Length: 295
Image 1 (cartoon, rainbow, N blue to C red):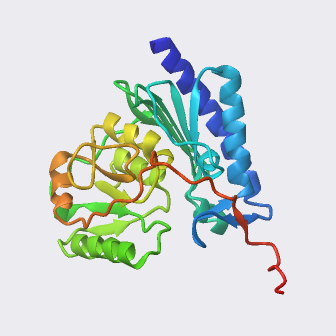
Image 2 (image 1 turned 90 degrees about the vertical axis):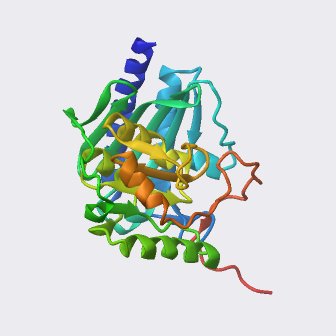
């Protein structure tokens, strides 16, 4: 098992670097933008190109392994996590950042066996920071060990979060209720990199004390959640219960004390699970095409 996991780690790092090169090159080109579930849920041709690159590379090396990929799921593939070895891939975590050239863009690759993340790789490609973790072996950035913050007082903490792409008024009310509650504790500050994978890497690095979000997906958090755990932190549900990768809810913190202080102030809601039955989409909507002529 150890040899297999090391091979997985080595391949994930290598293919993440190749993917990062594609992303950096694409930033200088015209970035064709499409939408998925809403006008603010974006996808680009580069997302699709990078995911294809990663999956084809992994299939050649590990033909028996399974995949959950953001763009594959958007195209109608199932998002079901089984006990089988599975690669969970976000080709560009921070697509909106990519579209606007906001400088936090990550390739996120998690690897699970028996539904448990065993390997996590997050490559923040514009920063050229390669975050890696293996269960029981620690977390690292460019080979240097990571350690979460030792702060235990939430009032002296920086908290990371995101607003997501759901603009339903009830959801937006919950998001801002949580934000207001946490700001009013008070905390030192609230930040957001625009990518769950980078936010989790910041927790693992000790730069922020916690990150919470509802509405993200398993491919956003699979790799980063292991980084936090292996750097000495905790990962749970926003209500304080056990973490569930497919629930689309996460609270990651440097320690349980800070996490539970935040739980009391988060206004939770339940997005549709990633493994819920889905209706196959008709495909992305192109934003760069002229409107259809009316009758």
